[in-house]
Length: 478
Image (cartoon, rainbow, N blue to C red; front, side):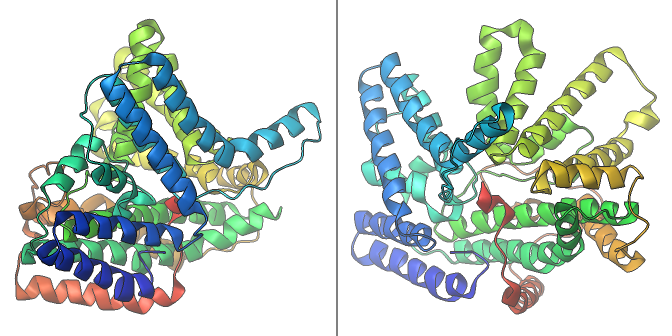
C-alpha cells in the first residue's frame, strides 16, 4: 500500500487512527498497541500477504535471539543471529545478482532464480541487526514483546525508513497513553501533506524529463549531450523530492500517533562536500553503517581508515540494490569523500573554490554524473548516458529550454527554501534538533493559524488531484 494512494489516505489511515485512539481510551494500552501492530501488518501485506509470514518469522527469531543475548552474553549466539539475518537478506536480495555475476565472469550456466524481493527487507533486517549487537553489548533491556514487534513493523517507517534505533522508539511505545491530542493531528497532517506535495506534485512531474531518456539509452539509442544532462539533472531533482517527500510523510504519520521518528533527510543538496552530503542523505543508514560497520572496522584496523571508508561506501551502494551499478555509485561517493579529505589535508585551495557556494555547485555537478549509475538499469545504459554527458552524444536532441526551466526551479527550492523540519521547528517535528534558521527563510514557519491551514489545504488539494498518476516511491525497491 502506498502513502500516495486514495485507499491509504481515505480508508486505511482514518480507520487505523480511529481504532488506535478508540481502543486506547476504552480498552487499554495492550489493545491499542495490538491494533497498531495488526494495522501495520495489513499495510505490509497489501502488496503480497505471503510475505507477512517472512516478516513475522524475522521478528520472532530476532526477539528470541535478542532475549537470550540480554540474559547471557554469547558471541557464538550473536554470530548465529547476525548470520541468520544476513542469509535471509542475501538470499532474497542478492542470489540472482551473484548467479548472474558468476555466469558473466566464468561463463557458467547457473540458473537464475528470479526471486521476488520482499518489501522493506533491507530496512527491517538492519534495524534488527543493530538490536542484536546492542543486546550483546548490554545496551538494551529485554523489551515488551508487543513493543518489539511494533518497533519493527510500525507502518510509517516500515517500507523505506528511517532505520530507527530501538532506544529511540520503544520507550515512546511504552509511554503511549492513547489520549488524543489535537496538536499531534495538526502537526502530523501538515507534515504529511507537505511530503505528499513534494512527492506527487514536484517529484513525479520531474520524472517525465528523466524516464524517457533513460529508457532510450537502455534500448541502445544514443541521445544528445543536452538530453543526457536533462535526464541526469531531472532525476537528481526527482529523487530529492521523492525521498524527501517520503521522509516527511513518515514523520508526519508517526506524529499522528504521538510518536517522533529520527530525521532521515536534511537538505543534502545544501552540502558543500560529499562527507556532509552523506551525513544529510539517508541519515539513519549513514548512522547504522558508521556505528556498526565503519567504527568497528576502524577500531580493529585504525591505519586502514581510508580503506574502511571506501568499504563502507561500497556496502552502502550494494545495500541500495543488487547491481554493479549501485556498487559503482557507492564507490564514486567513497572516492569523492576520500578526495575531499585528501584535499583538505594536503592541497589547500583559495576560499573562492572551497566556500559554501562553490562546494555546493561542485557537489551537485558530481552528483548529477554519478546518479547515472543509480538510475540506469544496466551498465551499458549508464555508459551510453555518461558518454553523452561528456559530449559524445547524438545530434538528435530530445530536450528543450522549458524543460530545464522547471528543473532549475526545482533546484532553487532545494538550495534556498527551508526544509519541512525548519518550517515546523516550533513543534519538535522529529527526534533530531533543528538548527536556528537565519535570513528571509526564518519568516517561513508553520503555526496554528488560518494562513497555515489554507496553505496546507491548498497543497492537499493539488496533491490529491495529482494522485491519478500514482507512482511508487523510489526507495521502495530497496
